[in-house]
Length: 169
Image (cartoon, rainbow, N blue to C red; front, side, top):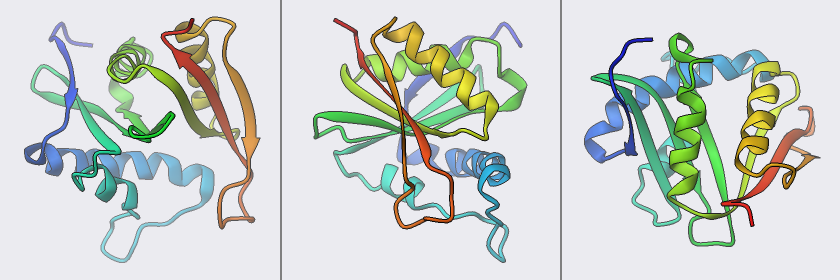
């Protein structure tokens, strides 16, 4: 990893094109665990991307940069409710296991204190390890995990949901 400073900030409409490109990498990574194929034009479904940039006060998109280089993003939803959901989270492979992910999660979650949930798939071993490590790091001994069916997708294995409060009390 370079010595450039890591910048984690709310994404603006001017950042949308960059986040859309990262979105393709994210959806490509996830396609391994659900068998999703790209559309005929090479894109993947993007309802969450659209919602994050819709201007809805319930959503907040974030962009992570290392110097001038984009290295990830996060979409938060549920800001107007009791529980926030880290709806989408992605860090490019070139900086994984370098601390960028934990720093980004801590920064994003810290901007919206309270109850949090994050979903991932059991088949995604890296995500399993990462999100359990994050939950323990943010709310030591005060987090839970449960499996929930994927809405409208009985053909898929249940998602794993990690829940915690940040800052933990």
